[in-house]
Image: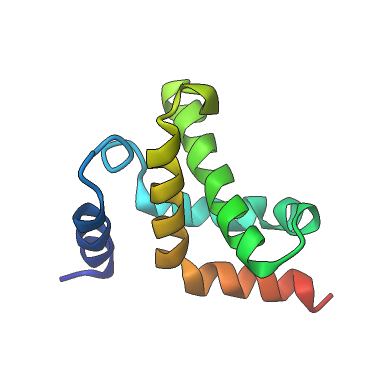
Length: 104
């Protein structure tokens, strides 16, 4: 089983609703993390906040750019749960990005 399949399986097990699962391409989300990292770093005060806010920004950007669904129209609690879980899945990448800006 590939890493991508493993991540999808983990996320699928956590969520009963498939709203975000059907819409968020994990490869695209991972590719967008570095694009948003610097700005999010300077807007946050801790690693945990950076981790969540960076993932949130990526998820909301995908939802807007691909489906023109703004954050106001997203299911709030489901989005919080999805972003939290996804940020854990991308922990290594997010930690590496945080350390790049934190060490400057």
